[in-house]
Image 1 (cartoon, helix red, strand yellow):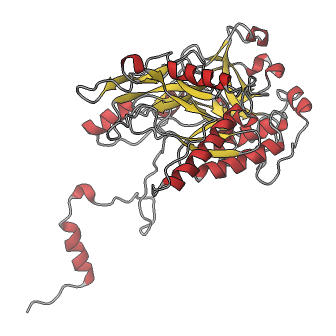
Image 2: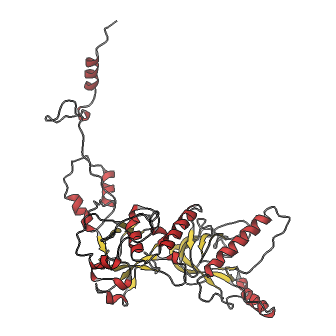
Image 3: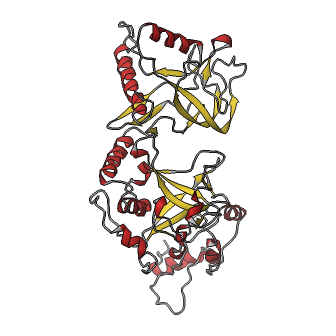
Length: 436
């Protein structure tokens, strides 16, 4: 039997079998037992202005190029965040804007907003304002900016779920907006496009809209109040300027926790507010409705589903829609309900209808030979169902008291869900001006 080689010979024979390209190389100035290392630069797949020039100016080690890596680098533009490129803002109040708050957002997928001279704090533990906002606004350009508190705001995503760029004319002011016909919880961060940096040109401007839509671009207050470092600066600024009260912020935080238990559902805080919905099975008709003093979870049947024989979704696509109170002249069924209420000296029944505002993804029928019982959604029109003279708008009666058969096993559960839906949808009328 041959003698077994010692450890040194075994290691030498093992290294000799390896390819020279994979042998570790040690710098001659380094000690013998120091492992070689390589510095790598990690970049983010975002684009802000001329950030690509910053990344390309840094020398990088040469590496083997492959067709796959070349295709990826051509699609993803690297970004190195530089705090000197942050967008400094002094206020979100339209009445306090100054020419220095004017921002140009073109050729960016997201922007970094930095309020100046505001002490950062966590609103979960301390909801009181920390600074004198008048002194902060007057001294914002006189004090050096050493430790920026940054909030990152993204525009949107395209049809391939990639970050979309702000349009070329996105030049104006960020501001905070509270809808008049909705709960204060529905406050929004918006962007006003103006022809110049003069705040007096506000009236001649317009709001930035979502891509391929006429709906205003916005960041909801429910999104801002989430305890996330990317939005901490906006929370601080809203509280410091008293645009949002500490009580409202505290309620929003409770709603965020309640909302998180429901899953990814649409939040409605007022009537006639647009929301994005899908024509296919992705939409389940589930909403988190927020009223003046309470909130409810609502689950109505999907709007664009045919339930005659078995549940089917005849159309694909998506659109911005909104709920509206019905007009008694909309259909024969609604005129009959209004006439019966008048004869019995009862108030007119309140019924919600659904209007298609803007189609985002094209509508297409996915069922060959479909008879069109669920009518094809059309932009600017009400959602309708039925054939021929029986065509009627989709509606939901807010004053109905339907009684289900007692012999059904799910009768009690259905009745409970119906009552919960009625209470929840009635919350949409809390801030409506025509609500009696």
